[in-house]
Image: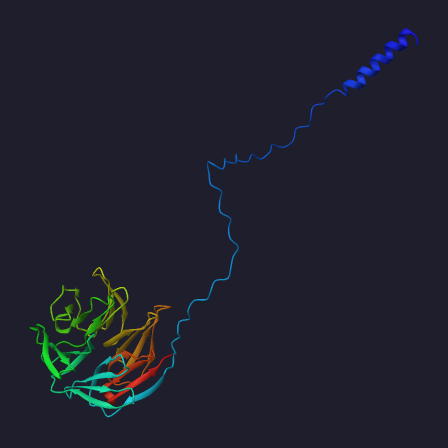
Length: 318
């Protein structure tokens, strides 16, 4: 091999070992920068989102029948007014003309309980089974003890207005260990509270025209019907009053466990429903004359004192 060829082979081997000359890459679009992942000791790992699962259905709320069936429970009454439901399902009935309290037993018997009252209106059953009755004629509350058959004064109210005396009353038992009596002070337009031993509590609210009945809600709010103001209101626990509805001469009010409100109205001879679901009012049943007392029986159906027809009527609403 001559010298020139040897030199050529050496150069060829060197170029092959070094490889091709580097080229400049074509610029690409700028990459998207991700935030740095924190160390596990700095930030706890996020909990994985659990897969969606079917929830158990809520307890169904009984629906109100918009056209309830009417059942006459008692007839040939004189002037039935207010009602109270006993634990055994008996219904106590005040009669403003007869001056009596009667008891309708679950098997349909009508029994005399108290007589000689002066226009008895509202009535409540205390935890010990005794009755507190509002005597409108004397503007006072009396207490009847069925164990001793004794009737005694309980609370005397003040009435310097010349107007009719106390009307409906109700129990406040939303705190079971602190049961009191709520008294819509009809002639004076106030809402009062009395303990079960006949002592006064602080004034609850004022500014009503003629409050005739009340109902205590689970949170301690009080529904009040004001017959001269044609209104249904709610007195909140902080003392503020909220007007809920305009109604034609409302007399009595109750509320079921679902929050539906029922009111008897003398002006149109009806029972009105204010729906818990919609807060809208509607006439649930009509055709009454001077409807007065209103209760929910043990089955959640309504019982109305239809005074003008001298009877007690059950509205089968469920």
